[in-house]
Amino acid sequence: MNKAIYTNDVPSDRLELLAELSSRDAVKVMVIGGLDTGKSTLVTFLANELMNLGKSVAVVDSDVGQKGVLPPATVSLALPEENFSTLSELSGVAHYFIGTVSPGQFIGEMAVGVKRLVEIAERSADVVLIDTTGFVTGPGFEMKRLKAELVRPDLIVFLERNGELGPLARALSPYGDVVRLGVSENARSVSREERREIRFEKWRTYFLNSSLVEFDISEVAITGTSLFHGRPLDEREKTLLSRAFRWLVLAGWENDGRYTVVKADEESFPRGYRSIHAIDFEKLNNLLVGLVDENGLCLGLGILKWINFSAGTLQILTPLERDSLSFVREIRFGRMRVLETGEELGLLRRDEL
Image 1: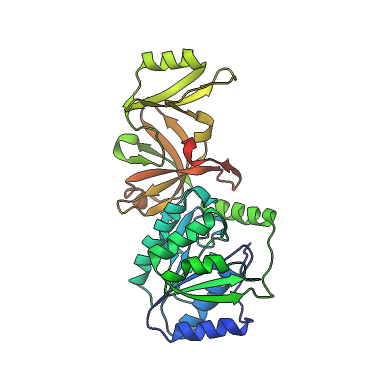
Image 2: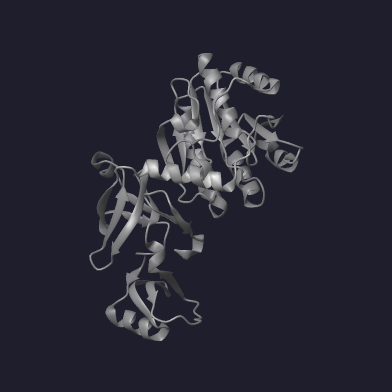
């Protein structure tokens, strides 16, 4: 199931944009628009036509909520060599882990991810096409500004219906030449349920043929969480916390006077604490994680299945093959829980882990 399918039935302003891009030796293009404005369709059209004209093309897919290039919850770089109908047909050559399909609390990571992959793309392609999320208000406004400021695209293409992106276009105009296009009458609206089904299918596809892998915490960096950072609590301290808060404290660490504990509630009642960061063990179950190499790029995704705190090991379900696993130097915790069958169990706030 895909949102955007390649078509040659395009408005004349797209042909004018194509002519402009084909006249340049090297160009970076960022495509911006709200939901259902045809961003991926435009990127697909431009990529195919530019390749037909002899240009080498790179696609940076940063629409983490509706990713075409697998895996989801990452920013991905693809280097197509032949025509394609949809971004889902492309294979990524590099990825940056975001860890959620709702990136409002991760605008810094989104901007850095796009910047990192554009730098790689520029070494391989004449034209770099950057597809973005439909998140254009509130934090989305600032996310687009940060991306444009870091990447400095040659052209920033806005797809809009009634001039609604005027303020964003003005904010981004110092960072690249602005082109404002209307939304095609062929653009199709996709319901929230359809979007969810599209994501579910992509999760299922990605985690097909996965296997359970055990990682030793002492051999990899653990990031994206306060877990495992600081001095491990001894049994006496865990017992005191358990008694004070009526928790079952499974593990804990002290770092500069602040405590992080993994706990399960023995009783449910209001608690007040300032210097203790309490993490419910259940929220770690089926948590999405990124398997990251020494360069900070994501080799692939995993689903956290179990933490053995006493043994210092993590059990992670991942489709990564053994050769790729040998390059994992960091396990980065995401902020959503998902099953390998495709079902999304929920999103977490940034401060929850």
